[in-house]
Length: 318
Length: 318
Image (cartoon, rainbow over all chains, first blue to last red; front, side, top):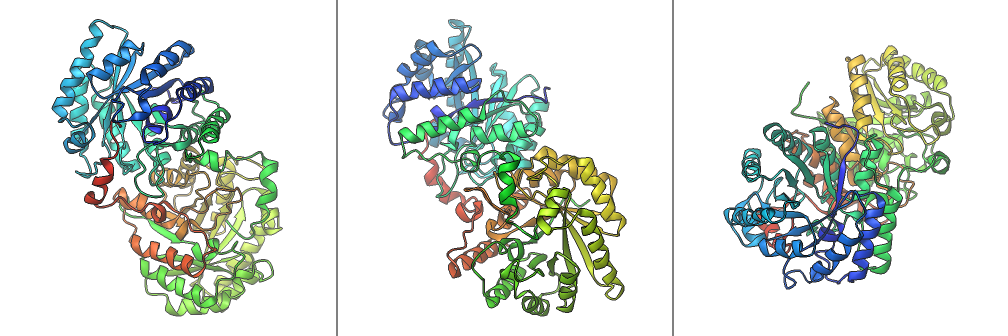
């Protein structure tokens, strides 16, 4: 295992935009992709091939897909979320070759989220995987939702998570995301599940999709890293992530992940300043978009001189 | 080592109030102490015996001290910060028996913070420790500032931290706080220093004093816990902590520490709701006081039913 680097997947364009009521123009989406790719992010989840009625924001999925597949530089993988076979077919027709399929480990959340039982979701996944016969370059990852807590069923047993990951593994899935869908996970749970999955399914590449709902995003990311996880989802500007409670933060911000890892000497290959510029650009074009991250609000520790003056203000303190 | 519980020291009344320009009336301070003690916090740093000219907020230190020593329930330790021998004498005269002395591991920060070299600070500490001859029940802890970064000298070598902790140990100090004074530490640094100190000075009880400046407070607390630290400073409402950058958070909030640890099954003995009530009470009396914590802004995960409705809003997502 490589302790010196991590892979960060940015999901701003998919997870960050999906709940925005304001439509982000197709041109701006393509521009965002170009900027994100230029920042050094190696994998970009850029849209969702979902019914335009369900999520009008992604009614331009095919158009965005064709554009990003044409401009993606070498070393940058564009990925799209697909909720079903139809979405996968549309994605393929637009040239996308990396798909993300979502299924919840809790039956009740899967029913609520995609109106299917888990078994029905797995059937749908099988059909998507069958597309690989005609498209051997197709890669399908699976995002397992509600791994660290379900709004209906509460905590999910790590054994249940492993059992479901094993089912996916048996279908040939090698990229599996452990998602803290409602932002209720803590570092000990993240460690337990990550270690268990890595130990039992050593050939799979597990990633984590963390929310910073209650400020534990970085702690959970650190726990995941210490448990062997090397692939992390983040969303520039901390957008998305289902912040249903007032005051809650969304997805862990990509720039906060970069700050965490680069600070610990773990390379991300991503330029911090480029990420902040993307968030500011989006917010400049659409002030209704409310970005939120420590790096946007505070910034990295400044050069010594800049901090020095302020430090003198505080006396007698530790 | 006990993995099942931690000790949380609340420093709201000292660190949280010291930079407030508005004077908090003595009666309210005493009321805060009473409320904090009733919440289950076992150790409360409640004032600083510092020159009233330097910090007018603590001009009532002696009066508050006499009151809290009279009302502190069994099992609750009141503690006061003292910057020098004179402060220690005043604290003792007011009945306080647990003192916190601060010295920076970086020479330049110590000069800036207390206008003394480290050697001069250690001399002052010796004089304070000599007071134990007349007061054998006196306990002195030392807060080591700038352990995880200095505004003037940058990163501090763990060997320098250990060397200085060893000097304190040789003087008979057994309670030593590792402080992230400018909020620049990361989990890997916290782990490295914590492990080194615990391994080399196993008789000392190390604690951490963490800031949440850039959102890494909980991650650093988790790293410290995993490295054997069992005593944590927090400030109710996330107050204090020298948030010199706009948007920066202050001390790690006591309520966020309680959320982190209780969620992981580590007992704190503290009632969450009581902490939130204290923050709201203080803010209600003094709206200029700006409390900030995940628990105040979002709250703990709600009962399943309460969350269920909101979860249905997000479709096709992991």
